Image (cartoon, rainbow, N blue to C red; front, side, top):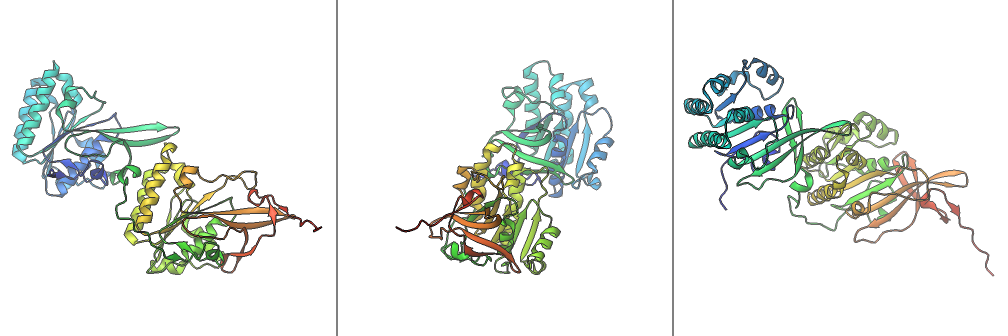
Length: 483
């Protein structure tokens, strides 16, 4: 299969969504309501093209000078004022369109493309130009003439318009691709997303993809389940076991944590989930780099907590064997979190991972119905990368007749399930641990007590015979006298 030559957008991960970037010499409509990000989008593509040695012609229908535009762009990292009038030229055709019509605009664009040797043309104001046309045929003629002039020079075209154009409109039928930008309210928060509505000659990723605008410009986050429908590397599971770092826990697991597995440790607040995870991270080394990906505690508080438990995290952090990434539990984007986690794993070759806790991803989901597919893509990729993972999940109730883990479909994606619990017994609270599932391996199905000592959390003796331990309210089993 012949691959079409591509023009990179320079927008992180957008080329992946587009199936490799913009097709050289093709034309695209970029549409969205005011404030959706079209101007930043187009200028970011333009300056990325300039940075690679290209030339850009940026045509607007502004009646005033471009000073206000440059003032706004000056706050963005990619803007390079030194390139204005050199590799990128901004030209207003407002007066030409008003006085002479569409055909004169086409003539001006042809002359400027040839004079500057442009490799990218941005036409900001397609709607205004269409309003100047008398018939749909005039619109088609205008778009076709701009396209033909640009294609003759090998120039890629971006038509910007501030409204959503109907799919059967003359403009849509003429161009090779349509990229739509949204900025919408979901509850009380604002969420940006984009969609490639048309992509001629490219296998673009369908559906909506989140993006954000920062001082670096647009950053796109392809939906994880779309970009990772299959893993990026072949999954080759082994049979080796990895030490958990918690005394007595490996024996319950049948020897240790299976390598490249994902274990869920769930329980109420204060039951020891993070402490068990810190024991796991304390085994980090140059050969087994570790990552703490959390939502609740800052790195400073995490170190203080580890120190109070007698767990040394400072040494592996200073040596580079351990990295701590904190994601404040505020407004997060689900796919941004997923990409951030996977980028960190790949960049450092992480082998030990603690996700503390999965609820941070759940809170970031604008559409919770896709969480199963998201977690499936995420865990499959993590396993394939050879990472052994412990993830935590907080139970809502300290005590109660029911135990609620993640939905059954999410639980089925996990290899191992471990429950921590507060148990009330004889006017005392005891912390317990039990292994509920270890995939493809025998394990100890016994409820054991856990204790906190000078080396963090450890598993000690089996809990005395009781009923109702999993609910947190236990009753001693009284031996029946023998007849």
